[in-house]
Length: 436
Image (cartoon, rainbow, N blue to C red):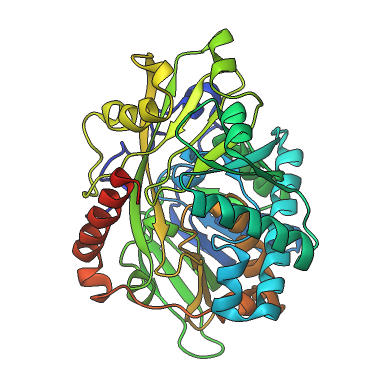
């Protein structure tokens, strides 16, 4: 199944609140005939557009190819949370890579946040401060406090404030949580507005963008001096370098990546404008996510709608009733919104890895890839594009730091990863329901 076309109409954004509230860019023409480029970027989400911005500003000839439209994938339909750090907390990072590497990875993630804010500012997109982390158990509350103390003591980051049960419930207006923390250095934004703004920045810098240009074959260079040929249905590009920036939509274009990166669908709804009722949902204009394995996450839009993500399926097909799927966890968190009108409901495809750290790889000579952001990609994907742009120009230290992280295949590789994940998701979903 090709996830590029399995759940969405060709050339159309999903029926999201973001698509309704953002004016689309004039279409970029499909690739036709033969073209020449220094670098071809496959995918026009945050990763690909960030790479294109940095390469074009450095004077490289860049062609960006997307099978759908700019920001069509996870970049334009996610929860809009700009989180701090890596997907793993620093204690887990230290176990995975050692203390020195963990500090480098933390600093890189802070640079990712700053880069994303810079892209947002240049694109005229507002970043609202604050992301709360809502814990369901006393053990998770204690861990949140320890993590905040470790960040302040060892990493010089004092923006995370632990919250007691009373403080968390006063902030998020839900009795479901035992406490947690709030990160004042994180934030939230309109994700499609950012993607569209980055496409404008890339185009203004000199990058050429082609929409409706599905890459279905690549003949990689195999030795120095050879060129790579990137083939679409209506044309081809001869280039010196290729950047894979398709994340969950890469499919089986590169099997070595497919065995380590798993596409996964997630679902979001937006309610009617809540007006004064918004004050019964959040005391401040912050974003929130909780500690469930199948995480719930939410925030208020600028017109005071609740944007709420949650629910899970064991199929790559979106459910017929996305609103019904997400309504259940929404009303568990906020029973005071029982029966609230849902005006928008949409799904999207992200990608996860076994260790929840992004996979940076060199699938072939003169080919770079970054994917598997595991639900923590708004900032890190922006950084990934920059790091790949730097690596193309011979400055690969940042890329190599990420690529050096251990990365395991999913059991069964590309062929069996999905049925085994279904079994695992069923187990963890049961644990979520039992509150374990």
